[in-house]
Length: 306
Length: 228
Image (cartoon, rainbow over all chains, first blue to last red; front, side, top):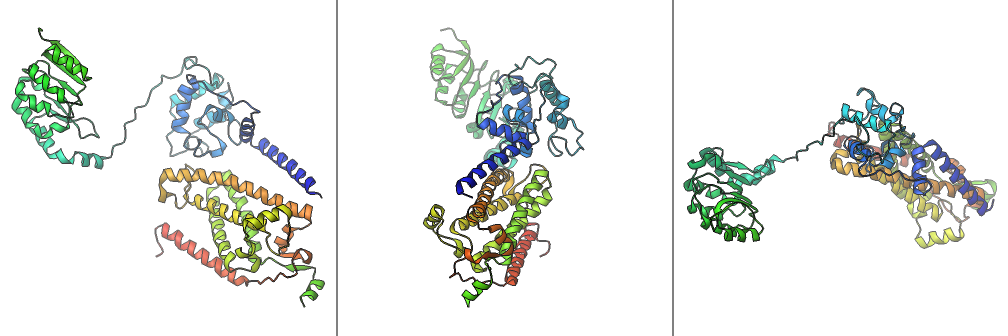
């Protein structure tokens, strides 16, 4: 046999082999045909029911096994094209027929069934999720049907995900002032709190103490002042004597000074606070407030009689 | 004397038994590995992968101390020689020709990479490779993706290998498959000056035992050192 004849035979055999593989593995066939431009790639619209309601469910429950990192069963559910292409055993969606769709069958099997999806150990889909997928398939498994076009879908509930907190790191972050914060929280109950679960920044709110909170109390908080990012001193008895204390709160972003005994003199000292973004005051001069506004501070409150 | 032998025996032994057994065991294990993962038999997949790894380590050892035609130095050639061979097919070799030698190295390296990444892989469900816990979930998932990609490279290499073997059979009239089964090649396909020294098979057995023992020690150490 000549080399030419042999390699001709190899080419034919390879093409035949690929053809058989494509017949046996429809998912592979679609991938090959789409890569070769012989089959259009299904695309979903960004505001379609699929994109808004269905894909997020696949993202949450399926793509860890049926995505870019892992393609179990040759199936990818991280895109509309992948979903419609199906897996190595063929399509998993039968448009218009939820009960005949492999994907729907799998997500509705009892958790004890070996073929149930997601498999045991993974977060299962709830009834609303299953309903969304059933309605989408029943409506034709479209990638373009607008989100509002399918009636009867359960209301979209965006899950709230709390960021994970490393308690050891938080404790380490708060450690330098933790003792003083605890002590002052005891002495001035309800006045000092941490900005968030993971932060060492502090919020000072003395407004509920009203006249019972004055300059002397604010002086007590001096050790913490560099950590105070929000201070509400409205309705308290603080006076201009507290101006240096307030001006030393270098991390301060929000300050409320309405109905206090402070004057324009205190407001003028705030110009040195580079982090300050919001200020609520009463009886300040328009010139002082204008100067602060020019520095990017949003100012709320009355302007005195100028 | 050598000429007498050539006249009276139509074939000459070129491959030792360990090399041939290794070759066909690899063929079976690659097929079993593919089939088992395709059908979801992950325990079988693990066993075939570990067996493959052990055999590859054995083959590397056998490439250093084995019979002449099994040794790397017998079939490892500079790229220039490989290219020249691919271009004109000149020269006669008792064992692997330069292109075949390159294929052996490529297959050993790729299969080794496949077996090693498999140790760290997971199927996202209930199965993890024996070393997956050492690298964490993210790295394990990345290595699983590498493991899947390498399989495509293996397919490509196997296809090339089969095409090349077919070329020798149908175009050049050399039945390399039969030679890899019987260990013998026709005299006409072996250079007259070839001198093949065969390492005794019990050495191969000892080498395999050494590999398996090292593997067992590593396995039990990783599993918690219960036997130590």
